[in-house]
Image 1 (tube, helix red, strand yellow):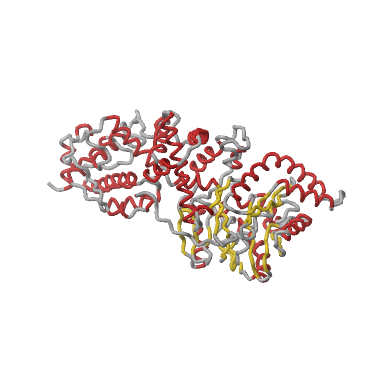
Image 2: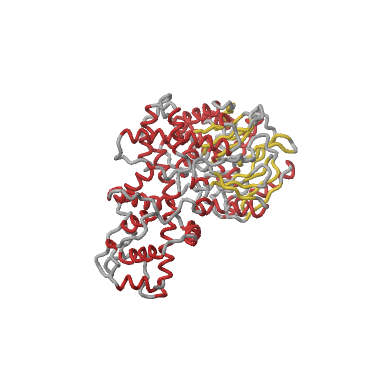
Length: 621
């Protein structure tokens, strides 16, 4: 009997009821030495990956910048013109790219020599971003008492701010535009860090250090470990409650067609592929099928279909089993199985469909968390846990939908300890990937969505950190030297009022960050750098520091009120920076029509929560 007539014969014989199908082969139809699975990335097939240090461009006085890159959008183009003039004096060139990315540093980091461009392998976006925001703000209603466990651990999130770093996958993909234009190679990183959440410098002894915002540590841990038992458990429970795993049949013609996958089909496929044991009971079978569907929800995307097709093409399934599977799909009226098995021309398509479903199971079930259970447990066994921190972590994990609230207290405690251990592994991986010793990695509380809006490496071993009290001193000096009749004077009054309010709220956070920087041996210079007057934003810290033809220099965002620029340049002289350039001076309305009256380009960018460093990337030895 040939392939086509065998299927039709089964249909005619009335053997198409799913509950009556008996499969001739008791063993799994998928074998462990499958070549496709051996070619999956490390983070999908085994434990900890091999990490290669990245030779990154640096951000401090050792930055001998040779090239700066910006997008060709109107605002960045206007700044590029000013940078080009500065470059003639300091020995660097300026290049525009047509990638449409105003915030040029968000989706990439540059290697020191410009031969490589790094970007995260995974994007923090969509519901993942929402879940992390819920995690980080979960303790914001608690009183933040200095010295207490968890005090301002989550930075501005501890104060109720949900703003989170993270760019979309499409933005990450745009990093290739610059790479192609300069002949650089794209490399994807384990570390999930926006360019603005990473700062690199050198200590006085020449050792490199890196400063990373805590949000990036959390995102790296969570995004690379979506398939932990705890995460699968909580998502499965949620999907089941929302009736989003398996849907009931419609009661109107065509009857029996389901809106989603059928659990009995999944169970049979999982049995055949060896992912359900022969002696499993009904509850165990249904749980495994639900876990599989949860895995699909958590990890499967349209980008995986090419891999699925490749796996399907390599499958060798016995004819009898393939026949029975097609009949199973046919009789359960699987939504996507729309083939007439009495039509010889449709059978080949039906076969391909079934093979793809089997390949999908192979692919999804082969995926694992990045961190192996043994590596996590080893840290758990050797780590001291603060009881209050564990309790707080349970609250955060539940808020972010990473932990099932209905589980036992012991289960939750163990899950929290595992999560804290995973963060330690993340820090180890980040240190290796960023090319610094673990002791030279500073993970700081987020002062905002990006750390580079509030701190900047300066001289060797020194970091400039915004400080509200120091800003207030600058405002007072400027006010004393500005006539009350000056049209800008009311803005000075407003700036002082804003600072007095914000200082009470944010000064403790800056103090905490200063402690975290000092903990790795960095000297902190408190800077008068970030404030707003009500009408305009000022940020002198989101700039570029380097060493060029004229010696040490600093390039930053221009204020349209010149006394502010002069006061900050005077501050920098005390730090040994004698040459300061202010850019973004052009009128924003004239440049693009998107600005406000009296607002320059730099102030327009700052109002949109970015500055000079945000719209540039650079090559620096």
